[in-house]
Length: 225
Image 1 (spheres, rainbow, N blue to C red):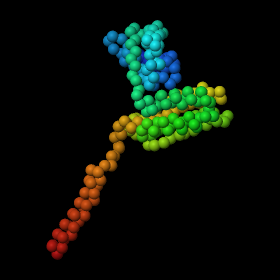
Image 2: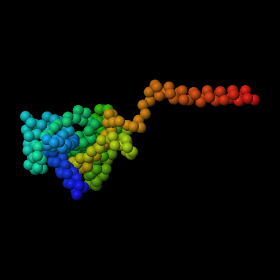
Image 3: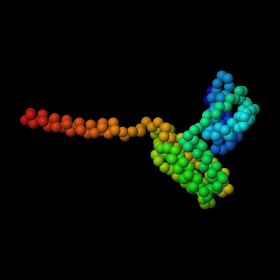
């Protein structure tokens, strides 16, 4: 019974998150988290455009709060805005940006849109990024295009620090799938080695020490003879 309740709760949370993204519009919301408190439900919306999400005098927030209360039967929903300052490292915002570009300019401009987005991400200081576009680009047959630059972890525990997201673009030839992966410069890499002056000095000392030991051994051998 507990498992069924958890599954039901997760489904409800997913539908709420999707509703928030659709109601506020594509490209405005990165993530929507639901935190349950004794007072009520706290919905934290991560966005790079807080002004557009809040609206004039908080109109949009008020409308969204009422909709969550009536449609999803939330007792006391409270919406908080989490502003994303470095949005170039947010995979969802970048994926939505590419999707909106394809819908606006058409799928024939997919290379320009992808390369510009990749350049923007890398210029901001990202360690690596990958963009995958799949669909009827540019011909009648579906195809997958990959645009990548820098360093990106694909396997192991450290691959979890890579921010991944996907979006869909509704174009005239058909639906185009967009997948974005970004490795932020702020990500903690456990297997990262920083080569500085101290490390170089250690390596030099390690290479010198065995030679000194070999000389001492040779001298002791000669004395023994």
